[in-house]
Image (cartoon, rainbow, N blue to C red):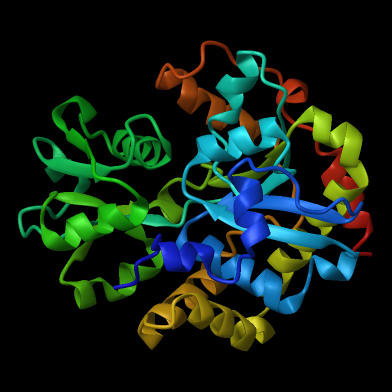
Length: 336
């Protein structure tokens, strides 16, 4: 089984300056084209970052990039605040809304992954439906964080009494699936690309548990930065978004299969071929990426409502206060 968040995988192909920058150690280059980028550290994100590097999409827009994968969204926020990061074009963003509500200088600037690439699995023979999870132990990450919110949203949709479910924080997304395989929890999430091949890991996919199908309104990842960076480095941000739009469009084309598999194998050289192909087939089936970078008001409202339900924020914020899509619109013009 792939160790999605292993240190080696997270740092593969990332330069030392990028790691130092993301840690808050300051910029390493005074070049006007240097840009420090952070993304979430999930397995698909790591592959997409490697594909971005191999295809030189950022360099094609005259950028000098440092890209780092970070498993903790609070560190991304800290890096943007400190000025050691310019933006995060592809990471979870639920925490941005309550931060803005409290006065943080942040803006969402693009959509990235429009659907969650997770599904619910179990190794327990007595767990054959989501309803069976009442009275059971379900592995998640932090309570109130992304995986917990996804899991609760899915269970509520299927009328599961979530007050009867015991949610346990067992770490990262990869740790949750390991816990499912080991049987230390009764159920938990894993990559949706494993649904058709679940028996390989001695688990089964729970019916109605594919979040890519069941939670299409749940925007999994977006891009965000600070108003300060927008004012100071707008042109650089626009070019970064253009490169990511090119990446999203590239991977949606069947002709990119060899390049995608090459990138994934570079990140996960020990993973079996079926995992590489499973991830590729998932992308071709679900087309999860926002090729136009656009994020609708309805999606923003949906994500805020989840925060309100979890009492993470106290009021619904106006779209214009939290989102600025003008950079994404300018980026798309660079692709024509």
